[in-house]
Amino acid sequence: MQLKLLRRNKLYQGRVFNVIVDDVEYPSGNRSVREVAEHSGGSVILAVYPDNRIILVYQHRYPFDKFMWELPAGKLNIGENPIDCAKRELAEETGCAASTWRKLTAISTTPGFCSEVLHIYLATDLTQTPDGRKLEEGELTMTMKLLPLSDAIAMIERGEIVDGKTICGIFLGERILRKEGTLSGSV
Image 1 (spheres, rainbow, N blue to C red):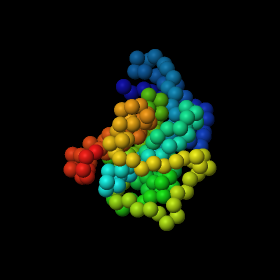
Image 2: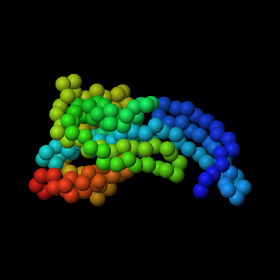
Image 3: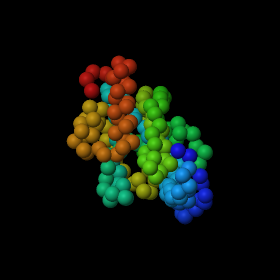
């Protein structure tokens, strides 16, 4: 369905997202309003060691006022390539680098009202960076955990991991690694 844009109102321009309210017209001639959280998107990293351990971060999420387990991830800078964002965020949040990168997918997080697209990558052949983690001020309470992929899947099943991008990355990554036969031992 093609809506006719009658008027666009950018109500708020923020650091993380902008708020847009559009007046639109349906093909029938009826009018409506569409509210959009305009977001530049981001990158998400499923970092997997040869023994099937993955990296999770535990960070405070302000909208929920609680800590959540997530895959390392971050917001794209204006004009930034998603793979460059993924490499930057992996280094900043975990102190790791990867020599092998593979894009798993891109997801529209909440297409009913938000333009955010997250690019999910599989990172392997991990090494520690010489400088270690470089957390931003809002990430100083972030902790990191290495755990078997099977444990992360069990955490999802128990409702301990509820973050959508993390669930997508873990399940899709596990499925692809299993299908290709690159998971070592049991997962």
